[in-house]
Length: 194
Image (tube, rainbow, N blue to C red; front, top):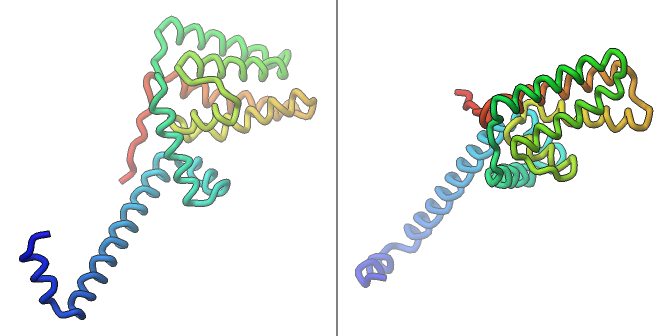
């Protein structure tokens, strides 16, 4: 430290020095609070309902860490656009699945689950367990990830023989919402709301 600065600090009245230190600490706390609030708002805008679900599950502080870790994980993925012929093939496959619903709703929901999984894989999402897939999808598709979870739950209940035809219809609609988003080109742009 420069001798002049040290001399100046020693010459300052202790009360004045204490006020300066307290003011500096208060300023740091205010800056920290503002940065934290901005981070919270950015995550809330980015993840929408998924932010609230994660907060309910983990508590605010840990939820924000979880969501930030998800973002970092998904940034490493090589999410790619589908080639035109791939996209058309998936659309055709979906039409087949949807047309089967009338005759065999259980099979149609099973095939919808399989088709969405294939589409995720084709786009570049890794195929871990379901919870990890849903967490990964929540980064780029936060508005439909709840639909994906609900559709998957219906598919699980169907395998146990516990889903009604109306449940299966709802499940197919939920799978369709994620399917449509996954078919869109590129990563979705999450627009900031002013």
